[in-house]
Each structure stands twice: as C-alpha cells, then as structure tokens.
Image (cartoon, rainbow, N blue to C red):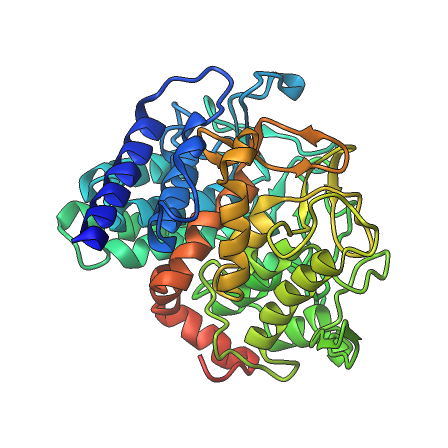
Length: 456
C-alpha cells in the first residue's frame, strides 16, 4: 500500500507538471515547475514524455502563425537579430514535422489537429519560393519569399531541403492509408518530393552534390558536399528520387571521396569509423552529425562499403560523453551528469562545440537527442537539467539552447534545429516511430540498395 500511495503521488505530480507547463503564462519563458522534480518523484518514462511534450510545443504552440512552419528561433528575451520573428526554417520544419507526429502518437494533440497543421504547412510549401525544386534555407512565413541566409545564399539549399523532405516523407507514410483527405495530403507531399531536382545540383553532371544554387549568383558558392558530416540524408534522398535521381558515382566519388571517407582512427579508444571531414581537420565533429540524418534514417543495422552506421553514431555519442566526463580543461559541472557538445548558441554568439573546440558551453540537445545511442547517459543529463537547482535552464519549450556554469552564462533562447531532434530521437529510442515511417518508403529502400547499403 505504501508503494501504491507513492505511485499515486508521483502520477499526480507528473500531471500537475504537464498541465501547468501548458497553461502557465511566464513572460521570461522560465518553467518554474522544475522545483517539483526530483529523482524520486518522476520515473524515467514520465520525464521522457515531459521533455517530448515541451519540445514538441516549440513547433505546435510556437509555429509561425501564417505558414505553420517552424520559426528559425524563439527568443524568450524578445531580442531578435534583424527583427526576424516571422522567419521560418525549412530544415528545422522538417524536424518539426516529425515532432508533430510524436505529438499525435503521444496524445499531445489529436490526429485531426495534426492533420490540419500538416495541410497548412504543405499548402504553404507548394507556393513558397523554390529553385529547381529545392527550397531556400530561410523563408518569410508571411509571404513564402526567400530570406537570404547570406548574400550569395539566396536560392536553393539542398541540405535544408533534404531535412525538410525527410520529415515530409514520414508524414506521407503516416497518412498514406488514412481517410480521403489524409490520402490527398500524402499525394500532395509526394508531388513536392518528386519535384526536387536532385541531379541538377550536381552542377552540370559532376560526381558530387552541391549545397547551393542562386538565381543571381549561380554556382558561385561552389560548395561541393563531401562526407562525413550531417549531410548523408541528402545523398540518400538524391539516390532515392523517382524523378531526378543521381548516379551511384555521385555518392561514391563525391560524398565518400573515392573511399577516403573510411578511417581507422580512434578517439579515446573508440573507432571513428568514418573520417569527420571539415576544413579544420577536426578529429571529431559536433554531435548533431549523429542526429540530423538519422531522424528518419534508421542506422541500427545499417552498413555500406565504408562503415557500420550504428557503430559510427554510438561511438560519436560515447566520445562526446567520455570527453566531458574526463573534462581535460576542468570546466565547472562537466561530468557524467552534465555533458553534450554540439553547435548552438554560445558565449561567442554561435559556435560548433566539440572536443577540439570546447569553450565550456554545454548544449542540451547534444545529450538528449543521443538517447537512442546512449540512453543511460542521456537520462543522467535529463535529470541534471530538471533538478530544482537548475530551473534556470528550463523554459516553456524545454531546455534552453545552451549554458555554461564555468562562465555563469545561459541564454533564454531556442533554435528549431536544436529543439527538433529532441522529441524525435527520444521517440525513436522509445518506439522507433520515425525510423519505421521513413524506412517504409519504397523509394528509400531502392535508393539504399542502389548505393550498396545493407542490413536495414
């Protein structure tokens, strides 16, 4: 009876926590409810659901009103660069589409409510600016016109388009066997997917995909995408396209660099599997590389000529975790309960945090979105964040983007690309929902076979 009474109290606290987090108005965005939470009061399962609901709400309650798409950023301090409150992100919207599916499955919203938001988003994407089928990085939510990401980046962004299409295809699969309206939505998504001219972004037939094309500057940015980084999903989708597919050589010579993507290097005794390529020759990339392409792409058994993708991602997360536990720079609070280095807001506005670029800034999305790979280590970080002593780190839409106990710094701000992977990857770790949906696409199966992948 004693244990049963404790269980009832725990359930009551969880319900109160969730109810107030959805209804309490707080101008600073601070979630005072973290004072109710201690390790003895909420189960892991309840904590996971709480975090999923809060981060889901970034895309549900915080969605841009006119378009329904994901706002690029939400600043609870109301300080915005360039007054960009209505600027939406295409890649972050792809993550948000998957988060909304989590919301339906977790009963945060009804299926009908979710469908209505998806229909609004898809209708907007049909009329928004596109460039050979690819959307730009940013759009104005009120008009659908391009907001340049930089002077010459004012056209198609194939990487952000890939993140968006990954989410769209999961939605297509979710509603494919639904009622008449839902089937019509799936058909509209299918049309958008088929209109992306992936092979055109090979810059006149080169064996590599290029990130950008501009109607004003053409190919001047000249950013050929080589692996390994966050962009694998772009090559998978390009090979899977039923209308504008790339040849396998584009993947093997461009992305895989003729086989040079393979590596035997290790970090802290763990195999890197693939060479973490960038201009700085960093040994280990920021941890979002293990998230963005794998919100839909299931890496649990996935292999190709170059490596095993579960080993790749799990080791990447473990390297990040072990580095923070060892804490070679002696930063305050780093350890098994406080870890996670990835790109986020920073003490220097924005930075790509990683072991060789560690400034004492922790980005919660790094550890939380790694839940499928290192669930116990992720749970420890969740409990650290939601402990009463750290209530300054939690706001209306879950953990704020970044903080540093070393520098006594935190920011009451959110980014779509950081909040989006959290509810999606947690759900993949719990049920495999988004992995199952995306991998059920027949085109994806054909594309993976085409590129030599096995064991999915």
